[in-house]
Image (cartoon, rainbow, N blue to C red; front, side):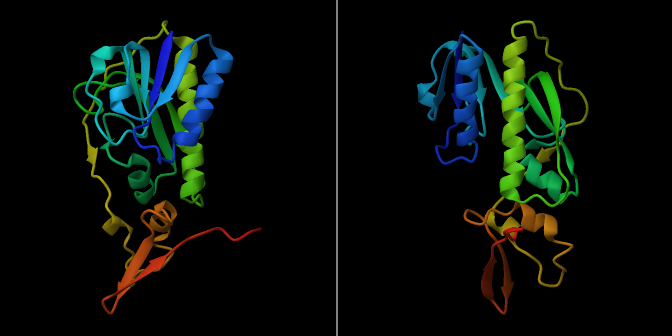
Length: 212
């Protein structure tokens, strides 16, 4: 069986987990598997896993199944950065769903679902670590079950999260750190750090856990 994993941004946080996944698949299964970073590199095959892709993959006919992982209780929470938005909503138990890609974004049938559980103190690197671990587990579970697997159509009212921008990392200097701690947790110290503006001057904040 031919398995392909597409991560269309070589700098994505998920690349190290995708590399680990390739190694684990080769160890556990007698499959042909490879990691690719460009949509044009996708070949005809059996299974294509689309991980943290920034562009919509349109050539779904090339593979028997095109699988996506999204961190929400679909059809609720479609769209961008679902973990971030849900943490900002105050949630610590977040669904992670493996489903079939379809012409309509985040609309395909669901195969498996699990939950990412946080304690409320995790910073972005720790959040991504749990996300990456469960992403690998869901994919391995799918491979262990396939082809004896039945999908479930999505049902219920759908909702969408917007794409986050640097402005979404802005802190309100009139509010306490405690009230804005979840925002600090999900900010990326390098790509989109937290910041505030005072007297028309922008100040950047970076957050780390002190060494114990």
